[in-house]
Image (cartoon, rainbow, N blue to C red; front, side, top):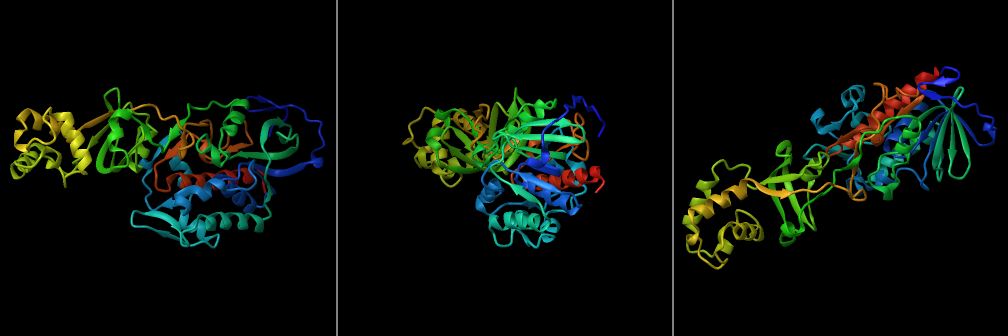
Length: 417
């Protein structure tokens, strides 16, 4: 690292006594998935590693993933599962995969019928234990209840100061603090602020993998119901992305995995195709109407859709009472019903609930393929703090493992160890 200037940040001479506190080759800020992966990767390369975590213990968010089972990856290698501005492919191309990585830690992984990967024991604690015990074996020093609130570049490295006044001197630093999602698990955006303080641009952040707010009046009668649908996210009338799966109607939101995957695109409209496998809905409705001509309207769509959803749609399409016979529907009513079945629209609001969001969309962008800062050499990034977001199904944890390993190895190589 050059003396006096590091990237675009001036190096400040430091007069403190480093040995009074901590001194290390590589300090990793954040003891989540990417931080633990970075720690063991750097230690495997022979670097002295100090892992700093602001909570009383590391890996709290890992324990919450996959409903406590830890959906740690996926069999699919399709890059379409990722969004953001950081090059995901260049990070993942050197990653051997979740099965290989965890097998090297003595942990066996299994896939479910949809390709999602879990520990063989079906317990998230097994994943955290494999990571922590390997770090202990490799000599990684773990310091919890240590919240870094300032990083200062100095000749030969960096000084990290905690909120309690303690300091760390490190030759290299890896920021793996996560983003803003799931503050109850320790992610509150501190790492993003540290990056900005060091001169980095941070792209606009918003919740992802989260329910999408919609008009409560539209969903209140349907609360608790689920329906299979093809869901299209639109903004200003333009299609952003389409997903198919189970949609859940909740209190003021639409949710379900397919909706979660669309939330990162901040749509202003969600459009539901309730019959994605039917190309001729008018003919289908004509057949149902004929077969159930003497049925009450409230029962006409039973079996095609959950009964309450059918009733809500019919109320939106006709002024006839629900007790009227299906034969009373006019051609105009059936045409309107067909449109609803194929393109039921819900004006959408901006997702803004960080506590229920699973990941952050947006983040740090100025990194090399090795995830080293292009603003400040010697500083690296891993995981959710980067401008990368993945779909549900283990893709975000895959990026956490891969980016942590990449940053840890690169930081150690930079030291010549």
